[in-house]
Structure formats: C-alpha cells, structure tokens
Image (cartoon, rainbow, N blue to C red; front, side):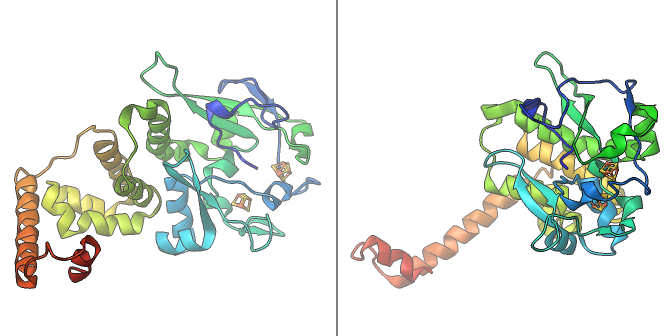
Length: 303
Ligand code: SF4
Ligand code: SF4
C-alpha cells in the first residue's frame, strides 16, 4: 500500500488512487477495525514511504539509533531520478509483509508511520505554478482487498485525520515535504546537487543521530556561528534539530542562506587549503624533478 503520492504521478490508468482530488471537509465511507475480515491484509504487502518524523518516532519506540533503524528496517529509494533519496519500510526477508505486523495487528501502532495513519486516504502536497505556498489535498485509495470501504460509517477527512492522530505527523512532516516539492518543482534551475549535498540531505532527514554529531562537530562550528543556547537546543531537542536540518538543506542546496556563518570561515578554509598545498609542494620537491616521469607515475609517488 503506497499512500504518499506525488501530484505528477496521479491519476493513471488502473490506479487504486481515485482520480478526483478532495478537500478535508469531504465525507468518506470507511472504517477499519480488528474484527474485519481483511484485518492485516494491507500490512501484508507494503510500500510505505517514511518521513523524517516517522523515523524519529519509530527509532524511539524501538530504542535504537537512527543508523541502526535505517539498516534494519528501511530501504532507500529515489524520490527523484539521480537526486534526492527517500526511505521506505523494508519488508520481512523474502516476503512483502511489514516487519512490524503481528497476528494481533501493528506492533508499533501508537508510533506507526504517517502513511499507515492516512490509509485509505492519500495526502497530496502540491504547488501550482502561480502559487508561492504549498497546499494540501487528498485522494482516496481503493484497493480490492480493503473491505473498510463497505463499513457503514461516514466521516470527513479532517475528522479521520484527527482520529488517526495525523495532525501532529503532518505538522512535523511539513518541512521535509516542502523540500521535496521544492526540489521537484525547481527542476534544473538549481542545477544538479553535488554528491555532498545529497549526502547531507540524507543524513539530516533520516539519520538524525549522526546529523547531531555533525552539527556538534568542530568542523561544523568553524563555519556556522551558532550561539551556546541554540547549540544546547539542537543537542537536546530532536524536533528542533530536525527542523534545523531542513533549514540547513535550504541554505546549502537551494541557496537560501539563513544560518549565520562565521566571518573568518572562508579565510580559515583558504588558509588550510594553502597549508595543504605547501605540504604537497614540499613532498614534490623532495621527490625531485617530475617532468621525466610519465603522468601516471607522478601520482603513484603521492599516493
Ligand atoms: S507499520 Fe504497522 S500499520 Fe504500518 S504497515 Fe507496518 S504493521 Fe501495518
Ligand atoms: S479494512 Fe483496509 S485498512 Fe483495515 S485492515 Fe482491512 S485492508 Fe487494512
């Protein structure tokens, strides 16, 4: 069950996603409960994209570091061709079922991901060409195996979001969705992101424990000018850290500078580069004249 859907990808023929977009006050007929004949059917064949906040919730639930969680429970995928990476739940070995599914239902129910909460509603984040802000609309996902659509209950999407505890997840997932949408809608105008900025995107969005170490490192603080108070917040509050990650990605990837930088950061970098070049020059001098060597051999001496 895939529930985060890019506006560019719907509707398409034979899709379980109903083609019409609906607003939050639209009424749907749906109810899922333990006694239903299809109980767990949707968790037996998963395709669940995770938001950064989903990962925070799950790694705490499982008392794991973000790196360990990523290795054990997720698989990366391309959100965009040769560009931003996303993360999906990794099914059980040699199967398609969710690793968190049990006979009794979801074993991480209180911390289940956003997509699981929304189902069978699909959240669509989109921005029209003439609009500066993103807006959200919804679509229904109707899959044959899901009998919840035949249950005698009507509810508005807004009420359903409240019932499923989605509002908090949406609030904390917003910054990430905006980044993804911005990258998709900006197309080639921001150029191809460097490998390093794509790595930063991955770490800041999905590997929060390593991102914290990075933000606290000397090399980071040599460049960025963060007050002691801000650093303490980043160290102790993961939501603040996660949002700072989104801000840093905008700063680095989309050239929207908002994080104060140290005035001498560039000078220090230039000085270090110069120092490295001087050391290299010293080595080259010790090796003697190099023009007589074939180009390939030159570099072997410096390995
Ligand atoms: S996290 Fe829970 S609700 Fe979501 S697919 Fe897995 S078992 Fe189902
Ligand atoms: S009603 Fe739909 S969402 Fe609920 S268990 Fe059945 S298939 Fe899953």
